[in-house]
Length: 468
View 1 (cartoon, rainbow, N blue to C red):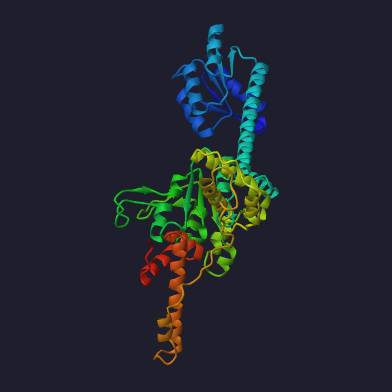
View 2: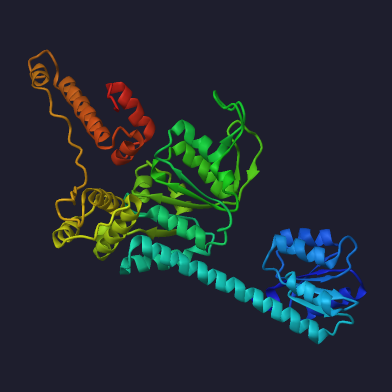
């Protein structure tokens, strides 16, 4: 921002201040005029000026009160106070209270210009330092959380590139690769960082509740809605909403999300009033949304709206140089958690870690190391590192031999009927196996099988599968 783009708020208390307004407009800045202290405070809230010039005597409050209230709204706002009766003790008190400078009437234009330019330059420098500090902190945070590899450095560059924009971002990557870490880093580096970051796992919430979670509802909107609820989209006004595993979002909910993306308005369930909302959408998926869209399983118009910028989070097997870095980090964190002093990993343990393809990515590595630290007394060996290096196979339960004989040709069943029974048996076996693997977590099982929560819920009931 140049000084010509800057806004200087002038509290117009007398004719000389009015002349100052004209002078600053001609010279360097965009002046904004307020006619009282309260008017000035409202303009600080709405106009976000870069500097404030105020007389010590305003129609409704004194200059020191104006200074305090302005600083409460914007602690970095440079405030320049003007007085007709300059005294050293008043100037000292004003500076101690946070004033940028203290000028005496009659005002000299060259002096005012010097003070205003210095205030604007200091304001711009503070903003730049804060932005750089935030960027360094988030780069450090991502690098610390993900590793020092070249792939992570490229990922951080993409995050820095898009964070300052208002683009919707699609974050693609395998389960456990760190998609939410990336989303949170984008928010922290964005101009929206002071507002809410809200996350919704589209695969963990039943379809019947997802729309209430996103859009909210009015009292009495449906059975059990005994009070009004504000949805995540409304909560994240002027902030960021992260939609995790958006491929699991039902098509009907996608249509309503598209309307929000286009019109910037929402309507609570059971409500009639459209509510304006300014929210940035970050969405994540472990599946190819374009392919899903072409097959009809995901709306292409929603995909194109979300895909203003794409970040691909590399899997752990694509950045093997991060494996040992992360393993040592997880050892330190788990030592602290468990109050242990496990020294590290033997070469056999290192070899075992490097030999694995890590289908569960960083999340799987973290679980393996946490268990190993728990088991180890001094050093982690390959005996402590038990790894399932292959993606879980969806193995159906073995068919019952008696059922096989009963379904054999010649047992009064047609081929079609036999095949239907076999398909049901296989489907039931797969569902039971995956539910065992996920500890009965139907939402997680639905994500593994790439089906929605409602489908798996109905099939569990249909086949009488126990989730215990």
